[in-house]
Length: 110
Image (cartoon, rainbow, N blue to C red):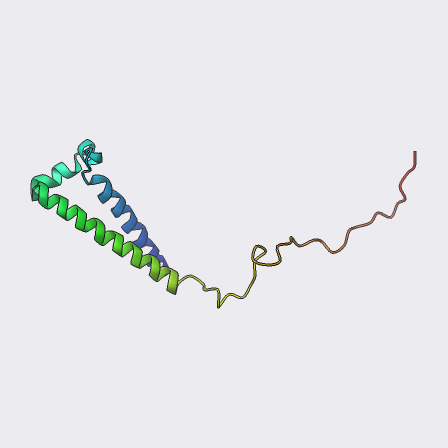
């Protein structure tokens, strides 16, 4: 289930990126360069195309937010269930080795 939701989230994000890039901005945006809104505009008309792309953007953004919340709440481990403490959350000190190996040969004097 987690994998399915992640795949849906990635596909939604890619679609959202594409829809946003195709929309016409004040300067023309990528829609003029790629011919995106012009092709769709021939079918729906320019005003209906803008409405369609705007509504699609809002719906895709909403779906992406809902998927992110569902994945975070139901599939990621919560702090209450995971009582292990990381080094960063702990005392802040790096664990030191307890013993230092000593050499058995005396140092040579010069």
